[in-house]
Picture (cartoon, rainbow over the protein chains, first blue to last red):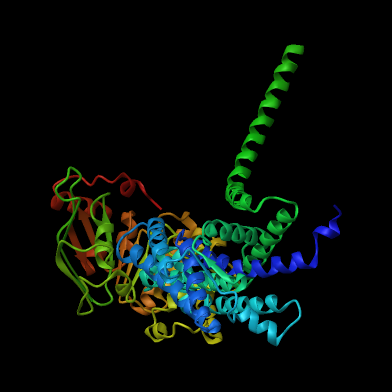
Length: 315
Length: 268
């Protein structure tokens, strides 16, 4: 198999399409995990929620309204998680897990108690784009427009006073209280925004693959985390705009890796394991680096000592 | 300006760890008062501050700031009019945000911008921040785009001080804010504190572990022990006091020797 048959334009294109959709989830985690410093496990259920709401509203003939409905639904899920952890004293990880579990029922209710909803013959934003734009890149154009709007919004929002307050909440909570900012409020806004983006991603995927499955969100948090970490490792820390770009890039890169894996006949069922390993390794990397440096130092000292002892014996 | 009316707080009531941190403490600070507080570990100094900032609810008594009863006001609401510096210079600033962004957050306390959630830092504000930073004389005005995490502890504490007083607070609480700094930096931050407090005529409470410092600074000195204020001297009487007088007074009022080695031994 030669390389040109692996790196095809269509591979690149589909990686860009799905990469940009998942980039929205990665951006959601960027807000909750990187900025607010909260491990928000609502993601899986919230993604399915966005998918289900998006599919149902699209079914009723409103593909554009579906985007906003999914945004709103996601924000509601985020609000419940935030409510539990800021006003009910539930541990943040637990709050996410609880909401995630509850959402399964909500999602299947939204899907009118069927595990799969198909929207094959209904107008989606992609179908409308195909009619108006045509060509092969209409999917990419639609998704890029959405992601661009979101990225620009985030770059602007995170530098407003409210955005600064949210960033400070995750950076130094004691300073936040002393600056007359209410952390309850900033956490709530942050989680609503974050989950709204997750919902939007779900809706885009539903319209993209013309169906919604109750289990579509399983493992989403790990995949998004992988994208986020790849992005942050590649771009590094810096201004907000730069980091947002990094996250999107990371997500596309992750999709290219996945597409290559599929091309190389790695079964699709194995991908979740692959992404789990990527995340585990990426998060463990700084720690392993430190440990390696320590071992190296210890080894060097021992070698020196052995050499010295040997010299003594020779004498 | 600040009136504490017989406030009490007991931690872990009913357990073996029960600790009466504050017992019927009353204090009245006049506008412009600069009081230093000295006392051994566990005397209730930090608890007193936390009672004022509202990080817990009092068992009894009330806190009145500038004529307003804030006993049950929430912490972030009170912090609009209270400046608070901690011993740890890392606590007062957000390390991954730039100096400018940190100052913008502190500036949120100016009531005007509280409603402007979606506004960004204006160039006019940037200029104002720059001017204020240059007063620190640490060259920070040329590093406004750098994350605060890159600054030294002293620089961070000076910045925190600036941020706490940028919008003049009704009361400034200093909790050994120079104790974690090296002597030279501590001196600089202290001089800065004196200057700002005098210029803006801020009512100020300062905990220190240094008796000489407690005597040199301010117009009033308080000594705490076992959740009580055991000594409260001000004005000319305070100005005439020496550390020996202070120790003698403490022994008389608290009925025991002053037992904080750190206080007795520190000479800087």
